[in-house]
Length: 102
Image (cartoon, rainbow, N blue to C red; front, side, top):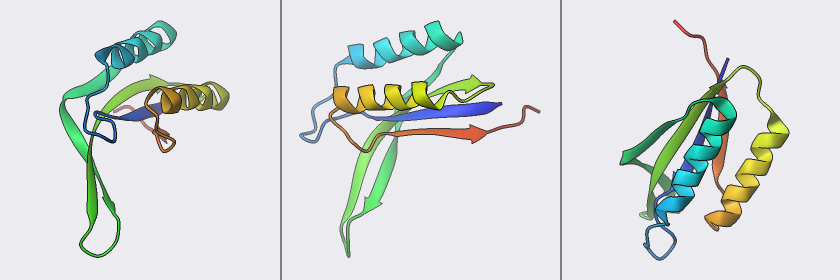
């Protein structure tokens, strides 16, 4: 089994929040396709990048997760590309991690 995680920005490069519809549409699409989705949206995490000495970039992110038996790489790549366009971000993270249920 695999845990798929989608990390999405909360704000654009100017600090403006994205339209809630983008997140709602994603949750609906994932639920329709996989039967469930877990969204961590209330307390955004923060991605932190080192941009050189004394310069760190911090960005609030939310995470959407689904569990799948098989990773359909082409489907996930197409979703990542669509989200990258919608959020105007070429560096969106969609990752899969093999998991064992306990």
